[in-house]
Amino acid sequence: MQPKILIIEDETDINQLLAKILEADGCRAVQAFSGTEGLLLAEKESPDLILLDLMLPGLSGEALLQKLRTEKNCRVPVLVLSAKAALSDKVTLLKAGADDYITKPFEPEEVSARVQAALRRSGSVPEQAGTLSYKDMVLYPESRKVTVNGTELSLTSHEYALLHLFLQAPEKVYSRESLYELVWQNGYYGENNTVNVHVSNLRRKIKEAGASEEYIRTVYGIGFQLK
Ligand code: CA
Image (cartoon, rainbow, N blue to C red; front, side, top):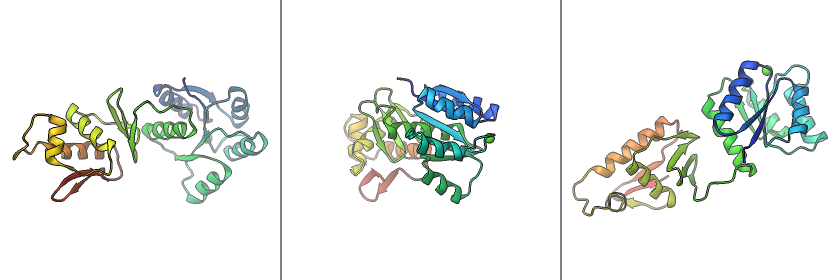
């Protein structure tokens, strides 16, 4: 099922850009260019999620959100988009019933990741069978794909296999020898540096994908684990 996303944004360029980002993710975008049109479509289209700009002509985003939550008793997830970055605004909006907050200017990857996360939380996107996740990392076994914050990592098959092992047991500490045996499946590890090299490449790729923290921890004298 294609999730339906209602975009309420008066700036045409931004509205179109958002629609493009969402459609590339397999969503159906419905576009509204004013608060009143947005409110109308929110009722008529029953979207799975609403992306809501705050600075709208006529009915403001704040007023629209309040109407949805109180008058219309509408529980659809709402992600607010706004240049207003002040924390007080965020808190007020979250209290008013917004589910998340994206500040402008935004990166397409951020919109994509936050929309997917909100859809997963609300149950609009079923988890793929066997999907493994840890913090902001998600592994999709069917497509052999791993994402961090919604950004796909470009992995070799050995790197994928290492992450698959780690994500299956995030607490487990793997020795270099056992990782070598499990992933390369050709016996004696010896003085081989292969595992270290692959782990450092993985760390680099995870970092380049925009991860805000380390994912693979060195356990001195033993090996590696997720952290
Ligand atoms: Ca605006």
